Length: 242
Image 1 (cartoon, rainbow, N blue to C red):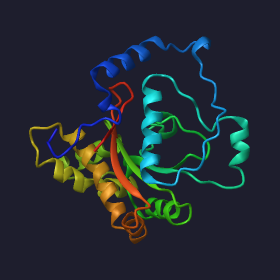
Image 2 (cartoon, helix red, strand yellow):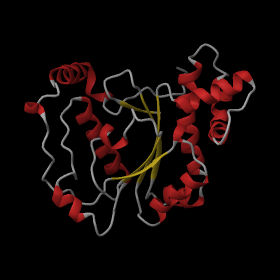
Image 3 (spheres, helix red, strand yellow):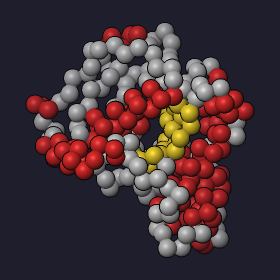
Image 4 (cartoon, one colour):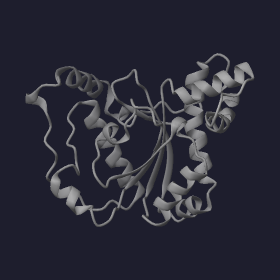
């Protein structure tokens, strides 16, 4: 990848020993009745600052990587607690791909995440409105745009750029939003075009959100952080910050 991308994983600072331990844990956790996790009964107070929110996602992803999920917020009492209102601590703008379920990747439950899912994790008017609602009305302190390996929507955009033909139907509207990332990715011919475009598309969605007055004002006030991330279907469940 180009050097402009940070290849940090959310848990890369743990070092090689911890990574090896995580792999061992993943291998040893087989889907049997003996290893099924019990939903956490420990209540968690509201998370209102960006750093704490990011740390909660980091810890949740680490639990996912090591197959030690706590399933916070999934206990019946938690469902009752959030019935009257929501206070999500993070917005995740993620692809609709069935292999990339946000709550599972970061081990969160009811009321924790405000999830905006759309093919290609693009930011159109509806997605922007959803995010602005979370920021303006729910005061959510963190936004993460998440791209992933072999995204079909990004692949469609790559095919469209290379062939000069637009896809049929409303898919063309999604491809149109992704196309600038593909053009940018073409500037690095030595890299994997699709993977580079996926990463650039996640960054592009982040940057689009930062152009929103609602989002930018919250960031300027120190109440919000907006970041881009990448999930590889081929690795051990880790999510990288871009």
